[in-house]
Image 1 (cartoon, rainbow, N blue to C red):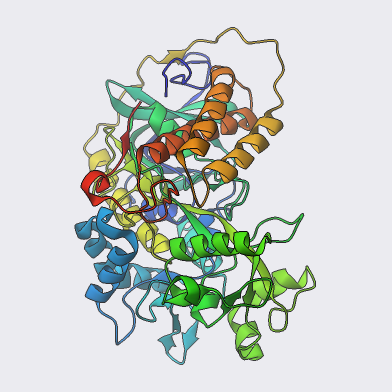
Image 2: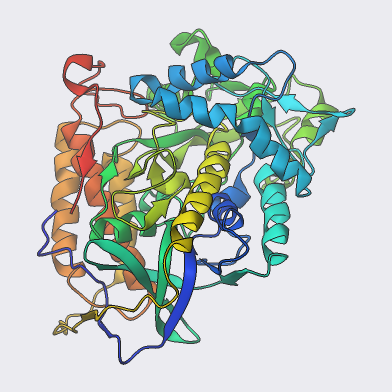
Length: 534
């Protein structure tokens, strides 16, 4: 990506013309990783948590299925590690996988001690199994609203911590760097406009980038902002070709796309096509419990065979009381469209779900930019390799959030309170008088990414996407917009370009990256990561 079309800062600013705010540790993002990071900072230090929306609005809060961990009497750390590496392949960092899984019971125990009410069978946690797992090890809450319950408990813990101050509905425009290190961030909100926030340490926990796709389970705020601002600040990003597509997203024309949890297949739901044929055994011996990339690929293939825009989840052979009790949220959602999940087939198709690529971090969440840390979906930690195992994402957010918060806290404590704000500014540029329809460009980007950089890719379609997005970048990125509509589009274009570059580079099929023109895994040439730095 050319630096001539990728400005260092999105908007003009001058340190003498905007207010300043100082804190010890700044956390950007209010999902589980960000909140856990804030709770990991010493109470003797000040923590500012900046969220783009409200504290309860994040990908974490929307998680349905649950959180994986070694929790059952018949489970072992080695078993969970093996399942994770089987899903992610040789690009998993085995030491990272072992570390995260070893801490699973401790971190989930913390959630329980903070008031998270997981579903139980008697006195024990009610554990379920999901695709790729060899054991029942998924803890869930409120049936199919695990994320909502976890975030409720963690937010309650945060608001009771006097050293943590949340700033909600605040957009982070860019990280401020000086002498190679991260010193602060430029933020904006409707009440105060721009503010320069200076911090001894910064933790980036901004989540994923599913909104670059037309079909996605992600909320509107998941526009890849953290990856884009870190890229502009000089951080190294990795494995941007690996976007995981969730196989089952509710597909009803005109409605928003809602996730239909993988736990349904874990409880015995079948995938059938328009003719009623249960097709997953035709593609994989694990049938509906095959890993997500296999199931997504099979669904797309079956849709092509039947010339139909979706397939169906079928639960009609299961006990109706169990289905309603286990999946109350999905039952209510489907009722809005006159669907009874105990009697009717649920129309589904894949959608962009989880970004495996992101910022390069070490085991403590340290990025390649000094004084900048990261945790959660914004990172490429090495846990997921080329394909994430179901329900490992909330676990990663907990473990890496805790590590990043604790390590950033130690580093911040070493820095004197009299640290100064460097002389930074970004001049304004002459603006074009030609109006832009930003909504149209955004919709075109999302449709193009879905068509050409979706579940299956090839060189011709990727090159077409790169050409179109490159043209949009040339006249969108140099502009200086005045509100989040423009800034989000600029971030989405930046991240989309990186994703396409990575997908073009990796001339093989591995994990959730499927190249139809290179259908085989090629360990000789591609058993390594793809890395990008501005």
